[in-house]
Image 1 (cartoon, rainbow, N blue to C red):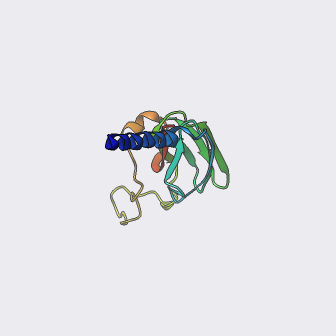
Image 2: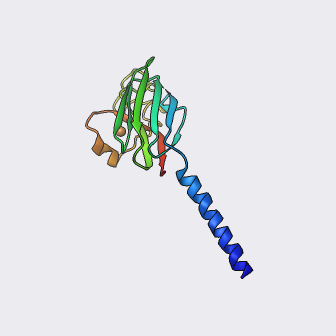
Image 3: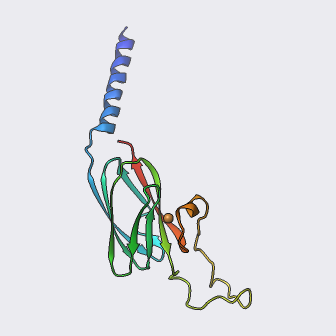
Length: 155
Ligand SMILES: [Cu+2]
């Protein structure tokens, strides 16, 4: 009898703790200052809770388009300017943040010769182009690289 009572207390306490962890917090305003340099971002994982209001202030050294997949929000990026993306994180899950850019800052100005005299290491390295389902969301001709993941945790 004693053992069952103790067990019951443990179960009730655990239940209360879990419930508290999931539902106590109110939606928050979350502001993230992000910086893109050489096709990488200062943060590669951003975690928020469902229904938080999320703001990204984005500085970039490249002309391009920041694309939050799933939510399908875009922010135009321009060197020297700070771009903003603002939304309510109402959908939960993991969402890819991609950079679409039109000129790779790491590649020289010269056009590569077709197959001839191509210097090793000068072209086509490390751009890390991701293809697949992503293609379907775009019509523009641009190169893309994954910058980060947005995790939206259920409330
Ligand atoms: Cu995209």
